[in-house]
Length: 157
Image (tube, rainbow, N blue to C red; front, side):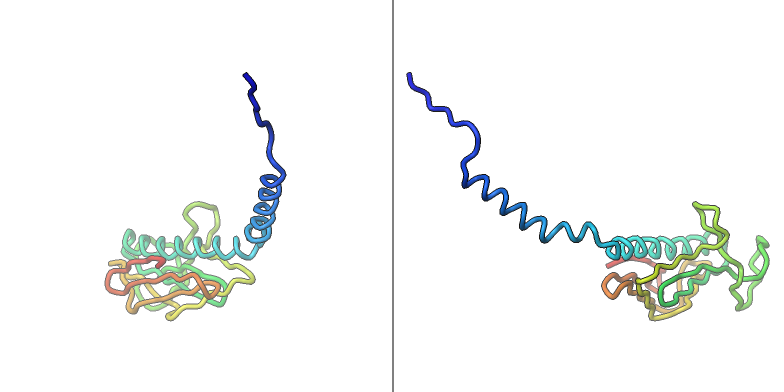
């Protein structure tokens, strides 16, 4: 009985694998090495989480929390000038909100090279977790965060 066992790959199969690897490396690999893409995504997630935290803090403490947006940064502040446990009221938001997971005394962040725009800045979450107007934030011109005024829902469409 004569058995022809083929072992290895043909030249055509090897060339096709090399061509596919070339196409994959030309299109996909540059995305892995662009720092700006990672910076935008990280800043987007940080901003989304900060806004959600501001809403939850306002509901939990009963004190309003202000979210201030500038060209490439955000800051969370509470009403008042001292770290008293009661809400002093008024319209001044100078008490820094401490970051819940780090030892930073201020919950704020910025990212150079990433633009952040808002339809309303600053906006304030009240003790019910709502804001006075709908807010749309755009990060790097492509990623969007929305806040619905009636419910305080913070989401990324």
